Image (cartoon, rainbow, N blue to C red; front, side, top):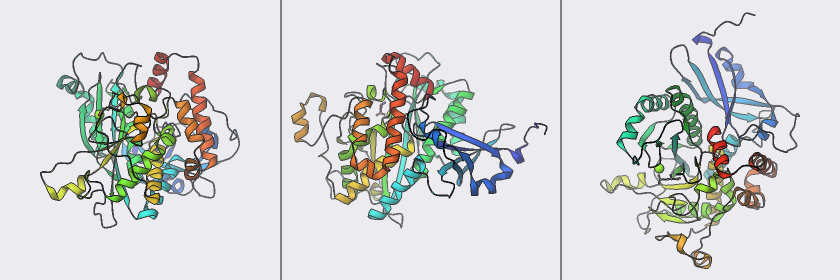
Length: 441
Ligand code: GLU
Ligand code: MG
């Protein structure tokens, strides 16, 4: 048949899955097939989960065998683009041909984690992802940390980018010129459950699609050069009950945390070294996770401290009625090399375990931890986080807790995928490694 141009009434729907490395992989079909595809999906191969972020194949047993379905989620389909370039983006789940969640589907792990929390304590989770990124194809201005000139340099793309986000489930909260060279930060409003990591996936896609169409090339890579400023992904969490009432705050606690919040944070910090390979999953992530970089070098809780892995965020006290609703805490050790689903799932599984086991977090720190010796840190229940991806993967691989939450098949596949990624970098120096990631993220 003649390859005629699709009109907008039969435009393409891209069904996308964010893979183990947070790379969006997709297949498309004409929208006239929507009902059928919502039911049976599109054919998908298990070996996709063995592709590294550099498009090499990692070791693993999946190979050429097996078949799966990528099934669009009707609640997460958005019409994007303009004029003749209209298309739909739908986020999807990877399922078996019998319709069950596939054991290696990142989105399904996030859904299971949300369900586990709900089952453990009835809480519904809200989360907001705050992304930092840099424009990699411009010469940065000197002296423009948080600068108005840099903010105005973005005038060609910032409006269209924020408008495109607002066409989806991502409601922009704030946008700013960040401190680093050509670095910007965009925050979207908190969303319930799975929509929060979904929104992170959509945001990264739209940044690439819309900002690049205005000639500016964004990079969300954890760090663009070894001495550079890091690009973090800070995830803000809060809880509500079934009636929508906030559960995160308790005014009687010196730092405002409810008992559930304290234990949830306790779980995250207790397991942080074991889940770090899901949060900071590239070799260069560990250039960012150093002391005095406003990232997260220790498994510490901070009260408004930007050097903490988990930070209790400030709330305005102008309207006392609003304090409980605003109260939230932020996980700062994540970067955009991570799958939003896997980072979120790992944090929620660890937090839920903390609630179940009533784990107490270390006392909030109020000092520079980099001046303390190991035993002084240990006395406060704090340790330095793994300093290489290799070490973080080792902790993950040997963690009974992580294997219990995610299953052996998935953990083995994930570790092998990351080891495959490391193999690509083995001959490179740190500048070259940063360049490789800059191209990918
Ligand atoms: N750029 C820092 C990071 O790597 C965060 C700076 C901030 O506090 O916003 O996470
Ligand atoms: Mg920031």
